[in-house]
Each structure stands twice: as C-alpha cells, then as structure tokens.
Amino acid sequence: MKPVPNRPAISNVLIKASANIAFRAKLLASPEIALAELNVPPEDAEILANVRALTLPEYARQVKLRLMAHQL
Image 1 (spheres, rainbow, N blue to C red):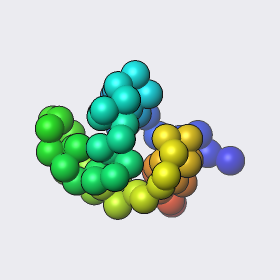
Image 2: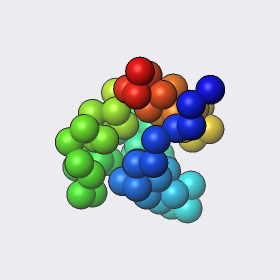
Image 3: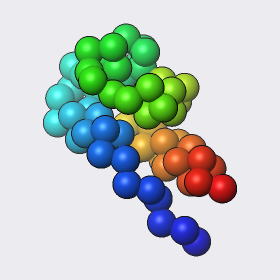
Image 4: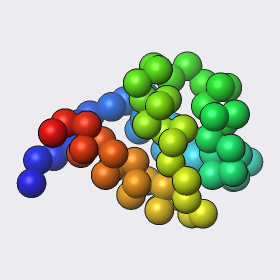
C-alpha cells in the first residue's frame, strides 16, 4: 500500500478541526463555507469540500481515501 501523500494544507485543516469545535462543526456541516475562511490551494479545497461526514474521524477517513485515489 502506498503512503498517503503529504498535503500540508489538508493536514492544517484537519488539525484546526480537531482543536476548534466551532470550525469542526462548520467543516462537517458546510465544508465550502468553512474552507472559504482559509487559504487552501484549490486542488486541496476540492478534495475537502466534497467530503460529507457526521464525525471528524469519518471525515478524515474519507479525505485519506480521496488522497490515495488521486495518486493512482
């Protein structure tokens, strides 16, 4: 299995979501709105904005799957 590519902007969003309850709630409810507040490269924003999940662990799992699919 290939490792997940290093994407600092995506890591920063996930770190912020784990530390900030208000941002986490916004990211899970309306990713596009939450990401508009941040300086995220368009290709990373596209990955993050298209994830729909009820919990942060599920959101992170889906992001990981999308990143792995992008490197194929």
